[in-house]
Each structure stands twice: as C-alpha cells, then as structure tokens.
Image (tube, rainbow, N blue to C red; front, side, top):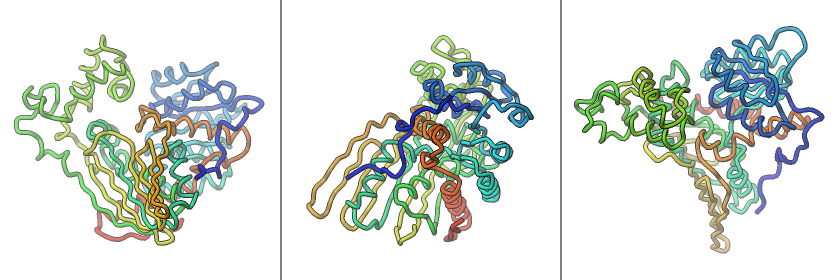
Length: 439
C-alpha cells in the first residue's frame, strides 16, 4: 500500500528567488496560526501587510513578521494604486465577510487563500467561485483536513485498491461537549443569522473530506438534526443567567460551567485558545481577575441554557455518492473533543480510522494491518493534526513554483462540498430528500 502521491508535498518545493510576500486580512486566531508558519520559514514567505480594524490585532500580527509590515484598518488599502507590497492575501475574516474582499483582491491580481465556509448562502458561494475562477488567480480554501498526514494515509489505502470496490462510508465528527459550548453556544458561530448553519460552519470540512478520500461526489442527501439540549427549558432549577453568579451546588454539577472551562485553561495554557477568545489580556494565572471580568461582561460567561444560540447540537446526514457509494455523517456535541472517526467499506476489505491510526482488514487473507501516523492534535488549538501548517506551506509552494497541484482545495472542489452542506440543511428543515447539482 502506498500513500497518496498525485499531489506533491510542499516540503519538496524549493524557495523562490525571493520569499512570497503575504498580506493578512483579518488578524484573528486563524490568521495568526498561518502567520506562525510564515514566521518560521522566512526563506519561503514573509508578512508584508496586515489589515484589521482592531489595532491590537494588527500589532499581534506584525509581531510575527521578520521585517517591516504595512498596517491598515481596512483591506481596501491593498487596492490603492502604486507598487504592490504583497503577492498573495490570506482572507481570514468572519464567514459573512469573505465575498467582497476575496472578489476585489482577486480581480486586482492577488493570489487568495480564504477561510471556510466561503459564504453563508449558496448564491454568495457561487458568486465568489465564479468570480475568482474568472480572474485565473491561484485560489485555495482552508479545508485543512485535506492536508494532514492522516488524510494522506487514509486516501493512500483507498487508492491502493486493497479495499476492492468501495460500497460505503460512515464518518463521525465528535465536536466535544466543552468545545461546542465555547464556540457554538457562547461563541461567534452560535447563531445562523450571524455566521452560518452548523453543517456549513463546522462540518463542511467533513463533507469535503469524505469526497476527497473516496474520490466520489455527494449526489443525494437526507438530513435530520436539532438543537436538542442547549435550550432554556433544560436549565437546572435555580440556575442564573451567568456561571459566575450561579449557586455553587448547581454550578458544580454542570459540565458546561464557564468556571470549569476557562480557569483551568488559563492555568494550563495561559492566554492561548480558548482563553484568547474570551479576552486577549489574560496571559497566565496572575491574570485571573482579568478573565473574571471578561466572563462577567462578555458572552463566554453566559449560562449555556440562557444564551441566544440557535445552531443544532446534533445532526445526521445520509448520502448517496457517485458510483452508488452510500454513506452517513454524524456531527454531535456530546462527546469528548477528539479526532474524527471513520469506517470505509469495500468489497475486499474495510478500514477503521481514528485520526491517529488506520486499521485495514483484508478479506482475501483475513489479515489485519495497523498503520500509525504522527498525528498531533485534533482541533484548531493543536493545528488540526498538521493540516494548518501543511495548508499554508502548500499554498506558498504553489506560488513559489507555479505548480498549482500543491493546492488540494481549489474553488471547484470547495463549491461541491458547500453545495452538499446547503442541501443537507434544506433537507433537515424541510424533511425532504435533496439532489445536489454538479455545479
């Protein structure tokens, strides 16, 4: 069995005559993650500009640069006439703020790497993809799961033919009870009208991954799901609106208590994620009072049963893929926060993957083979198992060499998974079986 080899690896690419010049639009956690790689590879890339309305965010980005950085409060400054100071732009704004900068910057000739989802509506996604494609600039979407060593291993098994003809796949996204409470009850992805549906905001990664490792397109979906638990009627009797004022006997029995999540995290990781989402001013145990004030005045101290969230906490998608392959996808909040888990079924064998290892049972000789990876972490704080660094490295390699095959997640591929997510959400809301157009 050999690993997937159709796409070259970024470490095989030599640096260009000069580093690729990078501008960052939106200097939040995701953007800063990519800048860490840029900082560590000065011969390959360097940060030359950052645009963010928050001066502290601009300062944090500039601190990761190896040279002078032009700082702007608006991305439109990158469109000003004159000598260009960047070759590519990383668009890491919130979901609803992708379309305008991506299209304008692509039309100005910048190569673009943008966070997913592309946009919160199907029409906007189509507009973005068609507009960027028309410019011909290099374009990558941050479907980081495509770039991990674990994904290479899974796809290598599938492509080797050891499983025979593929017949089915089942895939689990275990979001994690505390991660869901942090990001999707209290955090910026808690409401569809402010971000996008859960199946798009979180699970478009997974629908994209399913199509990538199987090489099949999702054609038909039926979906079910709801906001089952994080609702006012499920609040314990006597609970208050804030974890900081909740009676101790109630708070002690609540798995979603902000006290249980953020104070230990401050001790364990200082000001890193998830504390960095609560406040950018707490950096260690000595800043407990700063964290307390942020929890008291901001959304992250709110009772999870008395928030304004409306995205689902569990969802199942049944699907039919091209070639007759069937599949299921499950997203649930009610797990530990860990790697995705997958089973792939074939006529001659089956595969079990847990994000760190892949077990293959070959029916022909009844042998079982275990393949290990060097996976390190399953969430954004841990670099998505190596996907974050491999993505930015691949994007830079594509620009340095002119070889766009380094980019595994281009506009057409990303639109396909987004269309599947929109169809799944329509199915969930309408109780229908939805067909997904090819484009």
